[in-house]
Amino acid sequence: LDKFGSEQHWKDAIEEFKHSGSYVTLEKATDDYIATMLKKESLLIFTPASLFSYFTAQKNNAQVIGIILSGKRSGLHERDIRKILRRLYTLT
Image 1 (cartoon, one colour):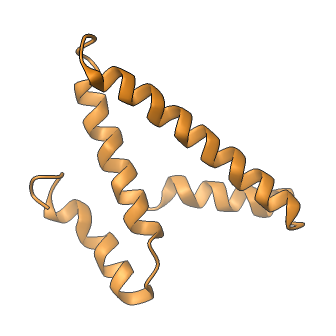
Image 2: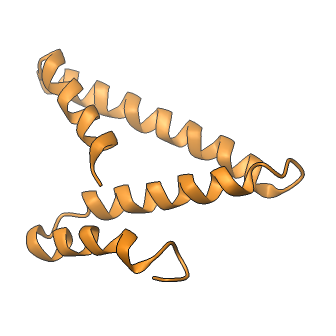
């Protein structure tokens, strides 16, 4: 894990997974690592990192749209959908 961020970066996500069996915090830790790595690497314009950064942003936008549509289809109120989206961006 030291090669991909640091042990501390993954520690809470692994503990949460062991405790609940949920992959949500692991996915969030992965997304945070990728965002940090891309932020550093995408400054060099003639590298694949800029292109990867663009596609990652598009993937994130598609996931947000999917969450909103799933929530609306299942009958969730707008405030509940907003809570879910906020939780995605505030998990550490």
